[in-house]
Length: 263
Image (tube, rainbow, N blue to C red; front, side):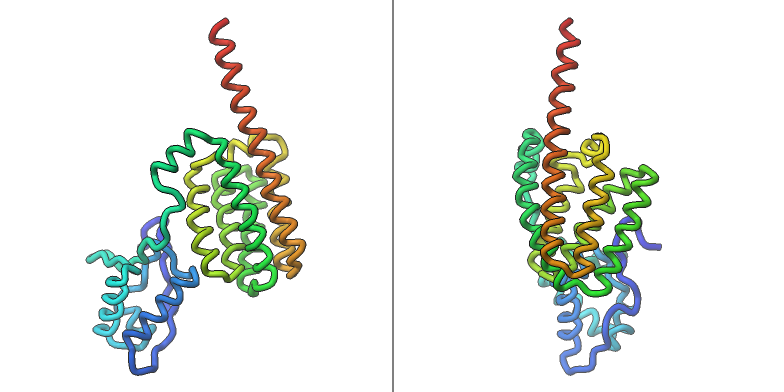
């Protein structure tokens, strides 16, 4: 049984190896999948036996390939457990800087300003480069986001929001962008700057965000780069305005509570 929350690489995932440097070819395949953002941090590779079958090479050659990958710090071998893709990208911020930003939540606007430019760029590339598989994933996520919205499942909505933006970035097929934005989205998941649910407390915001995600997805799937850029920029602009209102509401509530306390 796979551990909960761990990305498990399926069987019949790798290609058969037919050249002389068999261990090196296995290493090259795995490295390429890591580079392209297919195999990500924490992904559990198939067992040695399964890899041997998929690559059509001997188990000693599989062990040799895994040893090379471990020496290159691309995988982490946990004896008695399995082989995992190692932590590859640096954290977007050091722990000290994360704590500093938590104490100064207005810094979220720098974060959103940066995100706006990168997501417009990613959306433009995705509109031009996305494959049928990319577009199917984007549409499936949009359907799931609509269901979560209708059922008012905000926790699932948070997860799907991140998955949607990751899917858009992955559809850009720009490897640097994929790895950089993955680190940035980790900050979103940890709610370093702000909780998405605080924004969703504002009337109609959730509905608007869903519509904006659909506009981004539709533009990408239709291959209209200009519309994709416009939709992505409009989305982040709206998030900025909603965040400003939520922060103002939080400040007003703090002042009101203090006012009541001294009466």
